[in-house]
Image (spheres, rainbow, N blue to C red):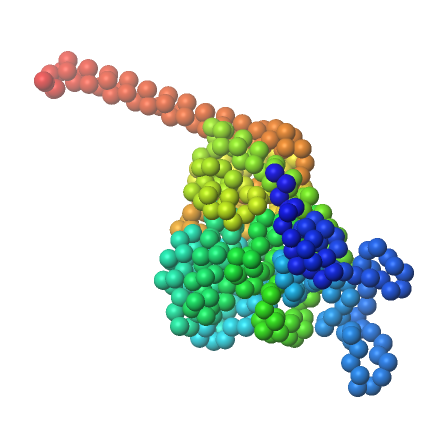
Length: 433
Ligand SMILES: Cc1ncc(COP(=O)(O)O)c(C=O)c1O
């Protein structure tokens, strides 16, 4: 399936163009000095000014930098928006949105969120008197039930990290809008290639551009995107006031990644589907989480809301960390690492890595068991990736078979022992009937 064509996006200069065209032309940058076909890295902290009291287009790089401006335009264009802001990391972007909150405000958030988002909510903003209610957003009725007159934001991740649960963005954003609540969607997992939350009624999109948008695991970045100029104003103010901005070299790397995001995500999706099917058939695997499997409880929503199913697959080896270690010892192509969305395949153990900051009881209550593994399926050849996974899983299966054998062995000897004891008792006349 070709996922990114026929969808047109709004962007200065290329309005009406298909996604892959906007991914290359969306920033509409013309280099007046040399005609460079790439956006130059404006490696400068400050800019000479012509006259006292006359503000130039750029005065200081925390406030603005031409390489960053190009990236911000490009990010906005890909989400079909006018207002984009770039940040030093995804967490800086999330924090920037949260800066609009005041003591006494309330946020309704999805239960199954990236651990860092949960941490900044509960360990930082809670300290300032902001309250949070975490609900299972797979059912929009839970969102409606949690909104109070103090609710300012609805915070959604779809698909969620790490269990790939989906939220009906259109339904939830509609509920929020009617209550005067701003809907924020973390679109990191889906990317605008697969899903455009603003078209579904959300007000703000955040990204960790560290992931698929930059795509090579070589830079950190974040983004806040909206069509609403009134929301953008305070976001822009906080960006300058707080200063968590990316440097020009980092902006260049994200911009370069964006040029190929359509192609890469298409391949990530193809590979992920193959991997999910392979895992589903392996005897060592207890459960697979992937919205592209017909067994996923929200497969129908995934088909309706997304253009494809994404590059992340999670699976369970029971509730057993030892099995997770055994699996890892067999993999060569898959690297144990935090993060996702790069061309190189990674695996991670959410309970001890991305979600270690979530209290164990909350984590388990949300369905993240100790045997959970999250795969970020890269763009290597799918056959090689699967052969490598098979090595790891076969080790797990052999260990499981050994334990089962031991247990059945001890069971047989127990039955034999009990049988012998019974026989002795009968001979001694202690048991009758
Ligand atoms: C869904 C999601 N949002 C936000 C973040 C934070 O992004 P960053 O690591 O760039 O700060 C992550 C990081 O893994 C993430 O997975």
